[in-house]
Amino acid sequence: MKSVIVTGPDTVEWVETDTPTVGPRDVLLKVKACGICGSDAMYTHVGGIPPRQGATPLGHEPAAEVVQLGPDAVGVELGDHVVIDTMAFTDGFLGSGGAQGALSEYVLVIDNEPGRQLRVVPKDIPWEVAALNEPMAVAHHAVNRSGASEGDRAVVFGAGPVGLGAAISLKSKGVAHVVVVDIQPTRLEVALAVGADAVINSAEEDVIARLIELHGEAADGIGHRGRAGSDVYIDAAGAPVVVQTILAAAKHRAVLTIPAVHKRPVEVDFGAILATEIDIRTSMGYPTEIFEVTDAIIANADKYARIISHRFPFDQTLDALELARTPGAADKVVVVFD
Image (tube, rainbow, N blue to C red; front, side):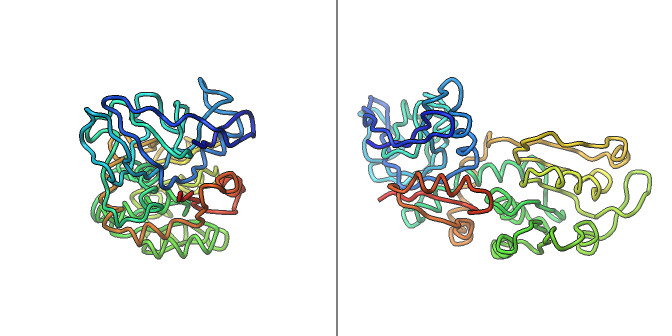
């Protein structure tokens, strides 16, 4: 079968590999769609992920069809459409340093455990939408980490896939008002389409002044005014200026959750924020959320489909990877197999 593999720094190639052999409790999947993640560009640039440096199969955002079952495999049936917990494979994280990647024709679930690695989805969900399950779980975990709840006012910085997913998740939790901040008008249009209550173009507007208009004015813990009334902030952008803006805006005991990957250190004046008693939380992966978000995708497939900006056929995967790694060229790229 054909697989896309990192073979060295900044080098990704098609490689012919053996189609997996199915064991007694194994499930063979034919990959039908796989999203491209920003981390794929990082893995490529550094030449893989230890311990598989130099030979790393890519692809960790798949949707697939069950095409073969071992004689003792249970929990799924032939022909089922499934989404996948790529962190639950016994041979390492799928597409993130493990032995397999989902930018391949087939993936083998070794010793499948019902409800652990796979979740069946309705067959009318488009493959490319089902393939959003993994990044949307990342977004949903960030929202869970934030503690956002009914009636809160929230702000999401970054209208990429995780930011948009966070906006949808926040609204699903009954958050009263969600603002999305970005510098690209087209992204902000999508944010409104998926349910954001308001958007701010930070290249053209004073973000803090606009948040005070939308969420009211508040104070820090000792009464200093000029703070926004927002309860929850999510940094899905990963730019130092975002953190600095949030810290300047945050009211007493606001929560900042950071799922974004920051590529360089961020300078923070802790003296200036001491009186805010802000709660800063990081968020990584999806400890419990991988299949929690699936129901939302099933119920709102059309809304989630708006997140996808580009679709490529499998034989153009290398082009898809190149587009996805080009800053500002694409938002969410998904490879769709025949």
